[in-house]
Length: 284
Image (cartoon, rainbow, N blue to C red; front, side):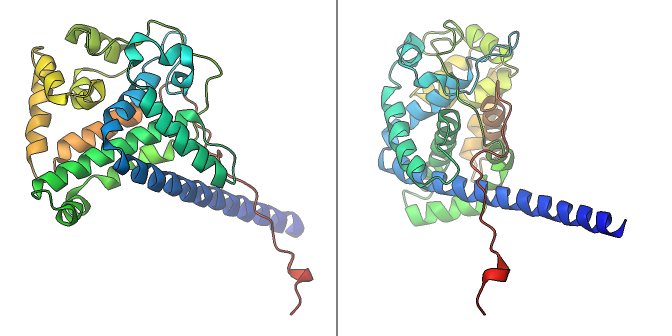
């Protein structure tokens, strides 16, 4: 019994060590991806709207009735990317392809899925806009803007988003007709789509930057709807504050939910076995 007990304890200890090791591997890999995406986006800030819309439109193909579609990287297929609602997103996808190639070359746990990198690029684009806002509030001074964002920013709110890392890729394009042309849609059509995937007027208002390159014009349209208008006004007021906490926290919460639509996350993705050192063979 003592041997069985010791063996059980050892197995539990090994399992915990393996789990901790996997978490460390995933965290380190994700950190490298974020650094690379941040650097790339900073060099090409004009692609931020494209990256935000890529993340949105890839996820918005989700269909609750069939539990199909969602944030699965299907937007990479030319038959889906060429649809009217995805017009102008090819440059954003080209940037993602470029970064993916570099990430895959350093990955020890296999290539990153398009589903993951598209959502992570959206996250990096969101963070870029937050930082840009802080810099503007400091009169364009980057150093002071970085300090402001470090002190008051929402970096600590991304925990759940970062944990949901391990999305699977679709093997073909998602069905047509699931994503509106946001620039031509009525507010009711946009509300209906958000409700269909489990979101609502509040999330529609907070994610206005994802719907097109001109956030102000989008918010002006959304404010014509009595259900959406109070939320638009709330987030506009929040963005005028030093911390813009309400806006940032609600956006991160909505984006996190959106970025996992249709997914069963593989929490062992990108992990790899570590060779164990045989101490008996070491020469002392």
